Length: 408
Image (cartoon, rainbow, N blue to C red; front, side, top):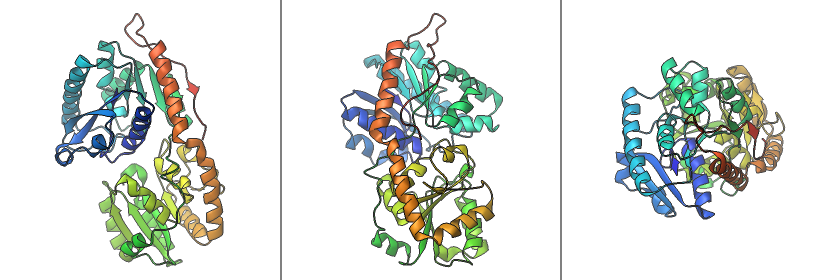
């Protein structure tokens, strides 16, 4: 049984988890998924459930899709979500006993482990890292952080996408963490020519150098840095064109900065696009810029590399695990607008070098294949089912820290 986000939730956890769920179902594993959905989205049907009938999907209604697990949701939201999870899981477990409950997002770890323990069902948490980043950064009240960590200590196994994240979780007393790097669909995300129709739609000329940013535009991604850098870069290279894919709380600040600097004609704010179209936008780019304050292992890193495009990322641990600087991508000093600008201009001026970096990145990212990631998760699930029984004090036995799956 899976409890977490699924499409149409626009977050990365929904993409990562849905890929794994679909692959597990295709390999013949019986899967039940419990996931949130807004009433507005549900009114037009459940497209994910319709496309994947092998997965039995149960939805519970939330007022909106929560998009920032690095800060706590409103108390009313958490309380309503807890009640919905308890209701739906009680109903499902009354008719179906799974071998294992897999939690697909950190914010569900407050509510699901007590239910799993009450039914003596082993439990695995896949963490993307945002809540750990938020706790370590002081973004959570002590009471909430303490209760979250207490629940995590009672989970059989935690799976993190990056070694640096596992190391940081250890500082919080969570030693039962294994590393399985994120996967990327290497067929869906592959090098392709720029879509000419999309270029015309966005007003991009054949000679333009496209700089893209793809994210949920929250503060942790530092998206305003893209605008501030563009204000410095465009007077020196007028062929730069910026395409912003996604939406979020920082969009208004970005648009205000564009207006203040007079950059409106050189920026395109696309908003959210269907995930099936994301490869089109990445392949439209010559450079994909990710100036994040912190990341565990951003999916966009891997998707950009899989498309053979140049990834220009802030020099943070999450980026260093997937980028060999100047070989499979490019790093700049986090928060340093001048360095970001100079690296953008350097990449824009050297097309053949960009292409060579993109080819090496495509070769390197093959280690993040979906099949390898599914194999790694199946190994963990099997081990937990065999060994993750209640100990006499009512908690699950905790597995040791280990590396599993392909290294970045």
